[in-house]
Image (cartoon, rainbow, N blue to C red):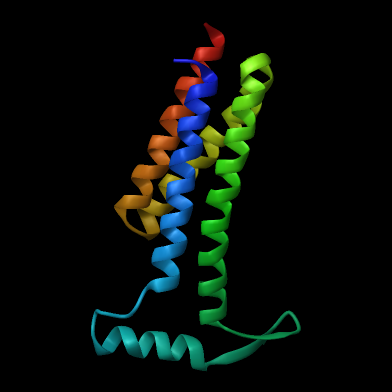
Length: 139
């Protein structure tokens, strides 16, 4: 397979990951009982001054969740653009692809430790496409 096709595959996976994360995150409702509701209420109601702005832990949680979805979508666009570059100049893409291999493997490790399996699978599938694309340039 060509580097360009593998980068497009990674782009589609990243787009699915970002869209799913955003949709699931925004639409999530507590369903683990009263303890979960109490935690969410506490996160929302306790506000404090942080770097000159009044924020709650919910603000940080929600904001970072949206940023994570957005980062996946930016990554998808970047991979799609790199695929176009790889059609003519595949060796130019290698350092960027290498960086994103490390980013996705690192993100998978953090996600495995702090979250759950499904996003880890997406990160590792993206990393696999990138590794394959990186190696395809060498051939």
